[in-house]
Length: 94
Image 1 (cartoon, one colour):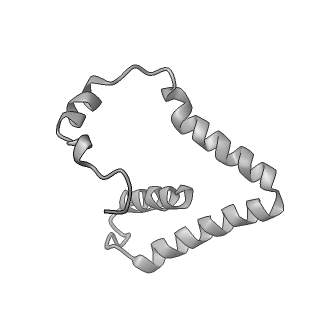
Image 2 (image 1 turned 90 degrees about the vertical axis):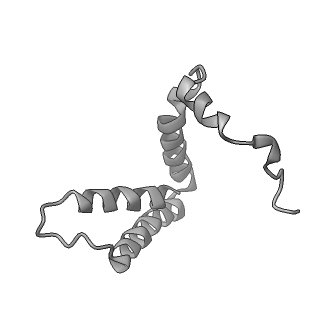
């Protein structure tokens, strides 16, 4: 997920470049970015599983840590009104 998110950010940054840049979707460009990011994360993991864990923990805390004490957001509650959560399957099996 980290590599996918990084690729999405790279795509966004590429699309905000000046017009001289080709803004058409380029699968090869983005797949190279994704593979590079996966390779970097794999390299960190292979070098030190502990440091990889600390990095992932830090990313997790940065994203979710600030939401621990958050009270329900009224906008989220409104969005959930349109979902029939009770009708959603509990597992992938039918």
